[in-house]
Length: 50
Image (cartoon, rainbow, N blue to C red):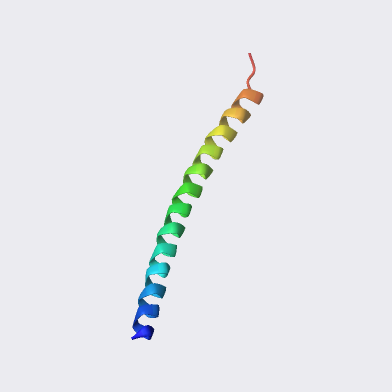
């Protein structure tokens, strides 16, 4: 009976870890996009000729 409980607990934590990884991946992807936009703006400002 204890083995069933520990297996269920392990499966639950694995699922939780998967959700955390997915959320972290989404966050990093968004930050990478923001960084790309900021970088483009900085380059445009530095290369601006009036």
